[in-house]
Length: 258
Image 1 (cartoon, helix red, strand yellow):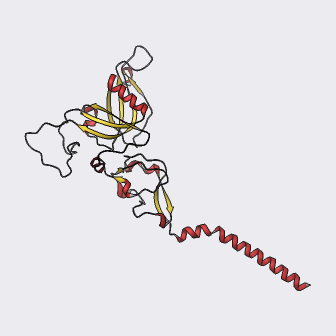
Image 2 (cartoon, helix red, strand yellow):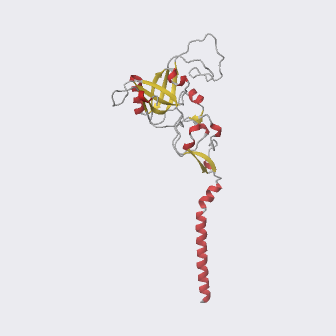
Image 3 (spheres, helix red, strand yellow):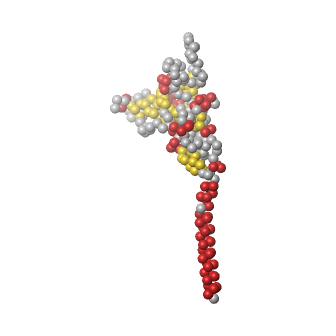
């Protein structure tokens, strides 16, 4: 009788020990599986990044995650250090690894014929003189602020003062067309990367002729730009995506000197 009790107790103890071992093994299975795949730190897109976004403005939209080595491509990036000066060639969606092929120079974008229009936006074109386009020193892939001025104010109050407002923020430039330049009396030394449609950064001569700019905007913002081109005036600033935004403000004659 006593031996049977001892055997029964031993069986219960062994069952308990076995159950504990199984539970412990199951709890560590995931960690062991990942560890066996040699996880690697890579950059993953956290929030959507539009095409044309400069690398310098991407940090807040990326996160470093551990990914199994078998799921990491050969061009997945661990940091942005080696990609400075480049821009996103296409829209980057949340969850995808950031790979080197998705980042290109602005010159590559121009050579490929322009910038991809982000989903949901449309393109609209308008002409401006060079002094209204940052001296003509813009390129496809840049972002601009669109200032609209109306001589009747655009407000309900009367009398209607002239008004200016930074109306559309951080707009993606998809293409720029420039008027043909008159032949110079002396030919300048050609640059290896010269582009007849792009300004030479070393050229300090004043640009001549209007520029035709094409930008990607929402339907609402496209309507504002068209209205301003028809009935008001437009001025652009070069406005990178990380530029400070102090909120909308309408400037009237009485506020210019404040």
